[in-house]
Length: 227
Image (cartoon, rainbow, N blue to C red; front, side, top):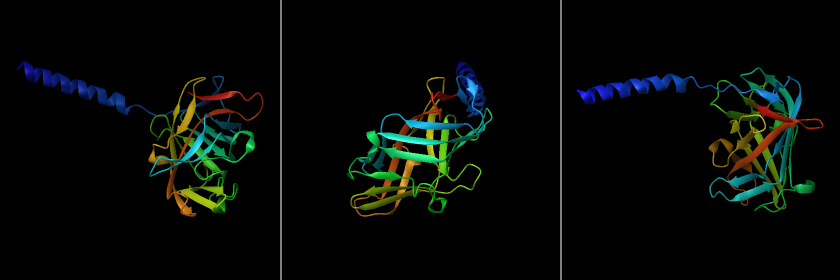
């Protein structure tokens, strides 16, 4: 009888935990010094550490860039959903030179930069109440437009390596005033791109890895956080 009672109590406790877990939601809000960021305000995303692309099969670094910078306006920030349009993206080494890695000196461009016909900019970066807690995604086109792929071109001494991802890139973020960072991991298949064209030197699949912070787009470049 004692065993039956213990089993019954354990079952009740397990059921009690379920609603709490299920009630967890993703409800991000962009803030500047604790104040919600207004729709239309331009912000920048600046890399922390190196931005890399790795060979998806071997894990070897194909390209690494000292600096990545993305800019664009906030298009939604309602306390539960955050969306923004990435209008500009650049990747380079310190001093503005090309990136480096196993492919030698490489110039990285998001397709032909601003040509949607070839899956270039703009991109949509968003985190919504329908996503897993602390998840964000980046996909091709503006958030108000139809989803399309994201394409990168690696310009090397031996030609171009062209990579494309059809599904959204998936990343995670850390919340908190003065603590917010957003990260895309090469350990996650949600960052994997397939080769569209290029020689044998270009891996068949590559994964993107980067961590970045958010700031206002004008001096004094105040930090933007997610709470």
